[in-house]
Image (cartoon, rainbow, N blue to C red; front, side, top):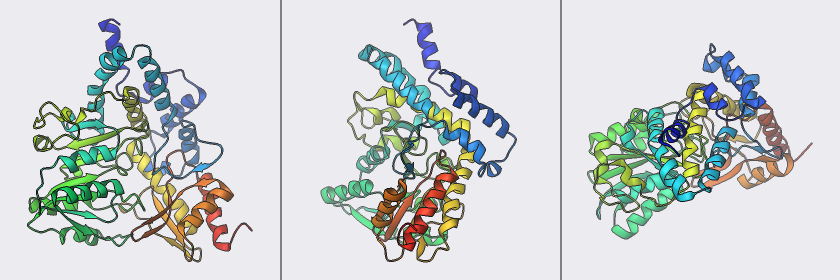
Length: 434
């Protein structure tokens, strides 16, 4: 491949306008229709579009949704739009033509443009972004990379994600650090209460506070900045689990005031399964040991956290298409639609006898993720009923003090889908299909 052709290929990995994104492959009808819908939506405010089913129908056509079930468990892993799937397949085929050449000499060169795009939508410097495979890998890089000694305290919540809890417990067991637990009463619409639970746990021995931006079990949004500001006043470092917040609703990483941030890109950014991102504040990089050994573990270069050996380049480079799709829809439109969908079904069931909601309907305290339970019934009973009778895929949650069924729509979800969910919940409360 000539240098000129190589440059052309790498240009194709960058950020696209709506037209360029959709025209980079053949233009099927769904992409032309979406392009038109986006053009007509330009003059409308995000809130006005949130309930416009005609507009979001064209977004739905960008996905290969299953005709056999209604997927309302996007909080686990989100499907990718067709444009991302096609890119991944194309890059995979390319790799298999001559793996060592196309992986290392061609696709690997797309990492720096990709780093810049991730930094752009995060509001940070490219020199603070490392590309990883999921939130667990990103966060554990920091959890195991921080220099802590016996007796040092880490504040975290019982409602945090199990992988992160287990990582901290491993450090506690091996090195004698002390874990200080916060137990949140959720849902809450009181930021002073939420932040205060963390802040009152701080002591002179506290070195790190681990904060989950969006509690994955029920979608509670925590006041990260309020916690971070209080922590920094006491010299405490702040690690944020952003697995369920990044590309879900509008914010930048600097607005959180954190030192470290890890996320999965196969959730709300809708990149391919097995993609993630780590942010480390520039001045903090030298002090963090990489999870996988690098030549100079004390380097100030963010790339030391990417010493992963051979990796799926085709998955990584398809992230660029996911960013393009995210830009095309627009962060504000996406946030408003997701909040609208959550509130649509929750408002429809909140007054049904025995139904209890475990997620706030107010902006700022919840967005797409919602949790519901039925008095006297186990979460698994409602989950199984919805799937067996209506082919609605959700997930039953029983974790600490949170028990219910988590419902997570995405931008391709329609209100018609949610009407089926609503009907299923009503019938379940009545004791079965009427």
